[in-house]
Length: 298
Image (cartoon, rainbow, N blue to C red; front, side, top):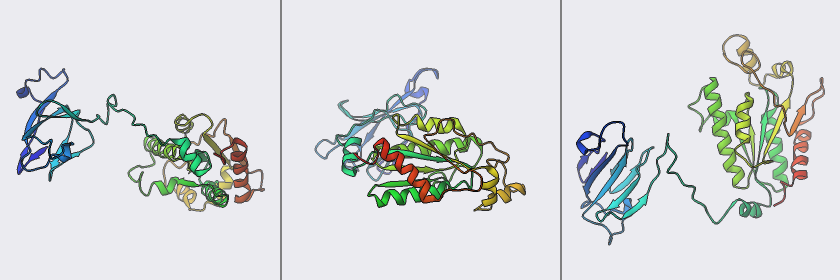
């Protein structure tokens, strides 16, 4: 809906616009007065504003005009033209179609950010069963790198579900979406030059591999916490195994839902018998890998 002054006006894709049959792409044109606004929300400066302008909207587009400003809602329209037909701005369709989206490059790139930070951005993906020590390692690793003057950020599986992924359940499809979102965020951190530590069960191999494919070769470092199920269950720091055994949690990884161990992790931290390395020792193993691969220098 677009409101011009106090009058709401709606543009529909209907035969009334002479748009042809329903099988063809639908476009609607609507001419709006701008006497009650400056036009700045549409990219017009005061000396450029006309008494009216046209909005061309593709099927499924949604535009609101409130208090003199154009507001884009989820899907966006193609373009806005002034009364002379001159293009003012180009907007992309977001959602099912991404054909009109163009990446906007900036003169400050990843290499510049890395030089500023004196490190190389990457993703350290810590995977393993609940209770295997993923979050403990992540914090020890972050502390160890911080003491060396390196910038890190932890994406903890539980923490992310408090905000970004709070709408997701633990069903298979939602778990896949949970991993996908975290993978995309981790990619952004790495592009910023930050050493991103993603710590989450991520039980399915295909989902982890999909996250790996988002980054340049070598920038996704998979760390497998190879701790036996019985050890993780004996630890049970959150009491989740007890609840799962009592039938109060369904689809619990390692019990009634599978965990697919990595086949080619860069780093495997394995507990053998009752011998378990300390968090600092495990963090040092990862830090040694980063040093060897040149991630702690620009």
